[in-house]
Image (cartoon, rainbow, N blue to C red; front, side, top):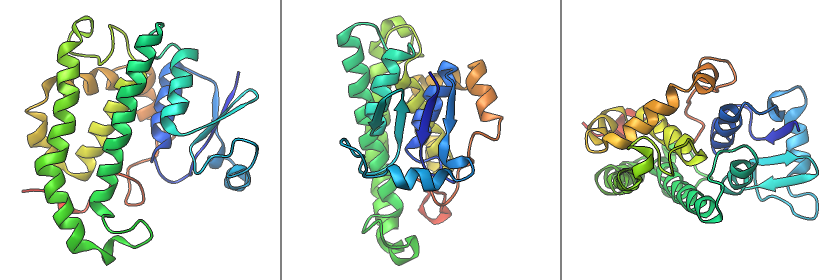
Length: 238
């Protein structure tokens, strides 16, 4: 099967979690919006069909059209061997991904705390206040949770969130750490000292041959100030 991923062509965003899963699995896929005429195809599909997606990403898998990042990963986890084989294990991995989705929202809201429709420059005072609280309270709480999950996962030996093998939750946690390093380099360097298992998962994912090749390729869109993770020096702690 050749998958078709529909997501915006210039940002990593929520589509990157799906890209990482497809790359780690060695799946055959096309990033449609990055092809000629692809964004027009993306826009045509948005809101169409009997099960319309509210927004990208969505994945075409044969006759299936699947929306929502966590939902796509739930499907790929089973189909591409990126989740446990047991129902309980798949649901636990999905639960972790939903928690990551919550984390992503809070990260996004550091630079857009008032409204997504406003420019960052229109809400800088609020963004500064929101980022200070995020870095002091929310980021440590989320990262501490994943640190505890990794610690409790004995088969993973501190280098995986679920079982002994790689799961899409590990790939998504890798993206979280990479994004935080970009957006808040000073604060993240301090936070990482408190979550060595989270860092170990990030490092083990980065060392995977397929992921390493992906990160070094033009398929990996660089971080920028249009996506979820944005680097505004004034929002980073000293």
